[in-house]
Image 1: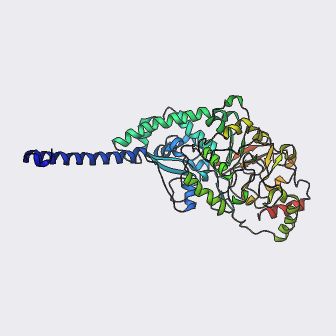
Image 2 (image 1 turned 180 degrees about the vertical axis):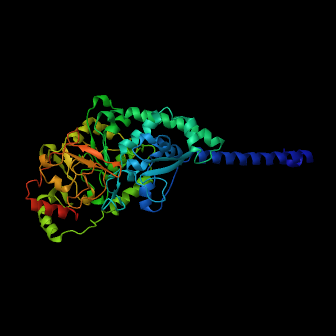
Image 3 (image 1 turned 135 degrees about the horizontal axis):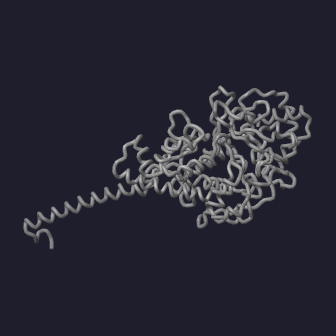
Length: 484
């Protein structure tokens, strides 16, 4: 029946019905748009500048392993006794003036803003000339002050505290912002979900309490993978895999080299994605576009900064000759053995990190990203440690794969003469020995980490190369190494 067949009253009623349908449809569309935008869309904070993106951009860690921003924000206020000092900065996180988040923490909108870790948390450090000097931030260098293990412990200990309740957390959030009725309901649910997720993480990582503490600038690279990615029975695995965080600048000439400290992978792309997994990314949540931006930058643009202080040119020239004769074949980019693996029987450094990466773990790592064109396939078990290039070595102390030797000069002494105990976490350069000041237990109430080389995984033996040089030649070699 057409409108012409209807009476005027019936035609008016039909027009009203059509208008009502249009209005309802419009309102439903708005509601659907609000629902999608609020609950389904994943919106990372985006930075056009690559350095800002590296420091604060998301790589995909927030959707699964992130924490709602406001919960993360108020935890230091609620549980200050669980931190060594004031806020996350007391765990070595680097804050820039005017920034709400520290370097290495990203934000993404998923119903509410969530925060997670990114590449910069492990690969941005600070340097001071003296105790009175302001810190200089250096992108791409090892994160020499950040205490990742204590960060995880702080979050999980908060979740295990009886005061971590929806009422208490929401009340603390509302000292900063007003939550409407819906937001309050969302955050109450978020508190419960966050607590459950952190308690599960605490249980999975309980094995860490049976190993020596990592300390600043170090991480157990693969044992947490065993627990969180593959559910390995860690009570049956006593290995210690703690190593220094590496630098990540100048990556292009490293293409094809054996990567990671034990050389267990030769693919830069897989190395980068596996590192992202360590930061909380999952195969489903990984932000490939973001990670690709960072990969292009660290491969083609980012370079180590030059040593900023005067170098004795004559002494460095003498050291250059020694380096070329005794070191370059393993540590110069043009060296015949650079990027290759030296057997443990020859290098004789602490075996713990090598032993922690097993054939079983290699096989499991090669199942990651199954079903995707970038599925892992390059992980392998090796018999030693990789010979790494030394670009920017002046910023990469302490030395050896586990950070067990505080300075370059100490590394040229035989193991029995190297420091048995020293302190990590200070960012004041040791301009004489090469590395960072390591003999200060504390500074202005800030206690540094006591590194004991007698503990499992912390051994400072091996790498005897250069230990038989004359003292003057050792000084010359250290002077030259500053220029790399």
